[in-house]
Image 1 (cartoon, rainbow, N blue to C red):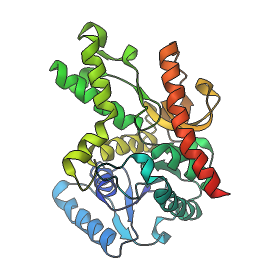
Image 2 (cartoon, rainbow, N blue to C red):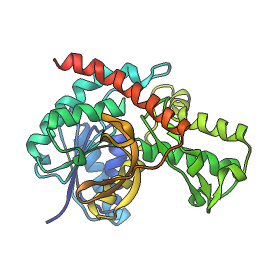
Image 3 (cartoon, rainbow, N blue to C red):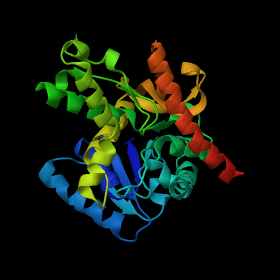
Image 4 (cartoon, rainbow, N blue to C red):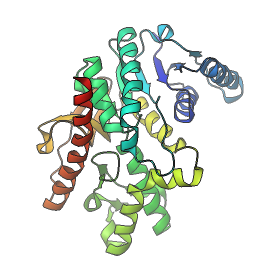
Amino acid sequence: MRRKVTVVGAGNVGANTAQKIAAKELADVVLVDVVEGVPQGKGLDMLESAPVEGYDVSIVGSNGYEETAGSDIVVITAGFPRKPGMSRDDLLLANYEVVKSATQQAARHSPNAILILVTNPLDAMCWTALKVSGFSRERVIGMAGVLDTARFRTFIAEELNVSFENVTAMVLGGHGDTMVPLVRFTNVSGIPLSELTDSATIDRLVQRTRDGGAEIVKYLKTGSAYYAPAASTVEMVESILKDKKKVLPCAVRLDGEYGIRGLFVGVPVKLGKQGVEKIYEVRLDASEQAALQKSAAAVQELVSVLEQKAQ
């Protein structure tokens, strides 16, 4: 049986995600959006690229969820984008309604699917999807750490003038200002970052990583990042569909790991055909643990608002 991935939201992130999934021939793709004609038009455009690009999958666009039935993975990118001066937190209540509706429909038509959340504020949207779907925590996963880590690796490689491929890093915590780049575990071909540059430079790279999304919003003025978020999402999709068991930093609900319970926080996990197949509990030093707890507290503030709304 052919695999099927539904991408909810035909904006820049969703459309690029759908196109990359098709180009890699990972699965047939259903692109869903509430705006009439947009998913149909973009889906057809991608399909017409197939003879040129050399991929052979089905791509359809829809304003409903009937065509999504039986999806292996549902990626939710739909939501309102950030605008200049807007924090991820400002998006909370507006995107709660979007994700709630999308999750209800996706879970109804694909009860065995794995959900990958991309909509911001990411960690709170994951909490929403888990609550609405009733799925196990292994099947509701947030894309944030892969993107944040990619940004950190990019800035390090640029700073040191080395290959991106040689930089190994890991960013934990919530997707926002309180994310936790683990400098102690960061290296270039095994050489610790602390041996390659000074602490002031490292601090600057860490801060740029935390501001990575806002930096792009500032440039674009009317939108937010989409190429790197789409690529990061597809890495997760590929690891699940191919059962590659990649170890990636993803947002997952913690049940006591790292001393955190009931919240979605970015931590290293193994992604395979079952979704999250293992959570790795890295031994953190006191400052790292404090930073992770601070990040979790920021997520809790958002979740508390949603809990009140959900009552």
